[in-house]
Image 1 (cartoon, rainbow, N blue to C red):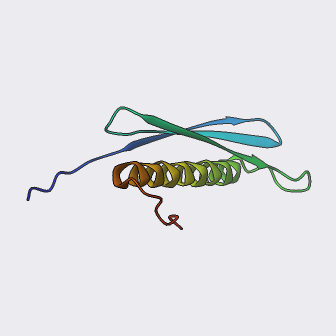
Image 2: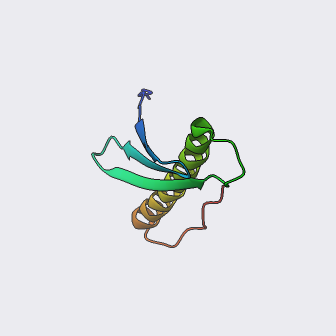
Length: 91
């Protein structure tokens, strides 16, 4: 059996203002499909303005949502291929 290396490219983009950071995540899969997700972070008015921290939080939330969507997609593909309802995939 031959092992094949597969790579995924994940893109993250951010939009920020003084109080909010929004992140958009996108992964393109080898079959040509794309999965997209979003995350948000809000700065409390008493916190220091640290844009990188907002990006980390919003980015992590977007990636977490992306992961959940990929798990759901994989779960559906397992069910479709097997013709039965499989056990949920937990993280």
